[in-house]
Amino acid sequence: MGFTLVEVMISFLLLALVVSGVILGYTQANRMADYTAMSYAGMAKSLQGAEAARSAHWDPQGFPPGTGMGTPDELPANNSVPLVAVVTNIDFMDMPTKGTPDSTNFTCWVTNYIYVTTLSVSPNMRQIQSDAIWFYPPTGATVTNTTILLRAPDE
Image 1 (spheres, rainbow, N blue to C red):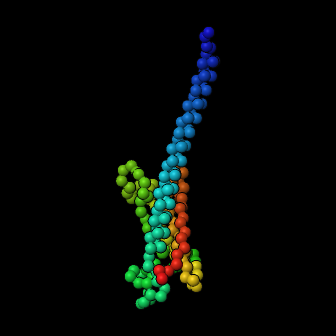
Image 2: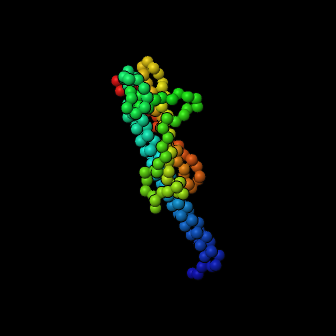
Image 3: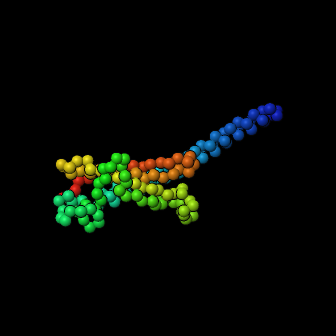
């Protein structure tokens, strides 16, 4: 039983379709794993910024009154419209990379904006919002991870 040229060509076509599907599935899984790693690193930076802001000293009844480091209110609220970040931090994402990140390679940079707003005065309550903004190179999209915490004073 011999194969005709048409049968051989059809079998090569089917083989090419199967192999291209496997390669496409592999590259898509790799892209999704890369995005997930960057998203988790962005979420970790967002949580890190929110926890750092939450750990700032805030005692509304402290003496002498004032704002800034070493005072009863180390991270004052800013309720302006539109919201203005109280703290801005530019850093590298905590993920494995090839080579050393520098000013020409923005693929693993993250910018963390922290917003502190007063929700109520009685009882004292503040909202801390931490936005970690990073760049996803394969699509060129800018992605934001957000963490929101509520806190009461250190009374």
